[in-house]
Image 1 (spheres, rainbow, N blue to C red):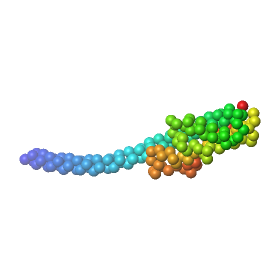
Image 2: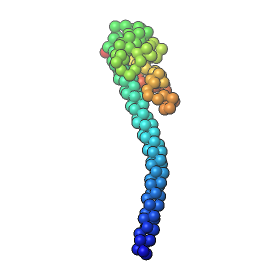
Image 3: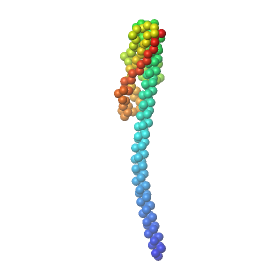
Image 4: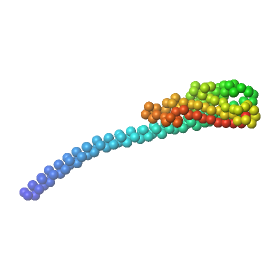
Length: 164
């Protein structure tokens, strides 16, 4: 009989132990879900932040390339026209065409955002094309959650070439 009592006490002890383990596991599942949700949220912010930075960098590279192309275009055509406003209008039309299909909005490339600088329109003189571009127009993924720093809000790209 002593043996049977011992067995029944042991069984009761096991049942309560399993119940306690199940309760602990249930509490652990809830905390695991909260930790997973926090981790996923942090990873999403990091992912969208990296994608937004990539879009901004792409726009900066496109603007630098457009300013180089504009300077080359102005340097080749400057000799035919001695007027800076005519050259600027031609460069604006050229750059608006080249900006199509890029991340740059061609409507923002107008005569007030493109500046042609040259001391004189003569051979072997430098001519500089400066593009002022408002990056806040590039909405990206989450503009309200990831605002642009002030240094990126108004980007300036410039390039110079010698007049041929």
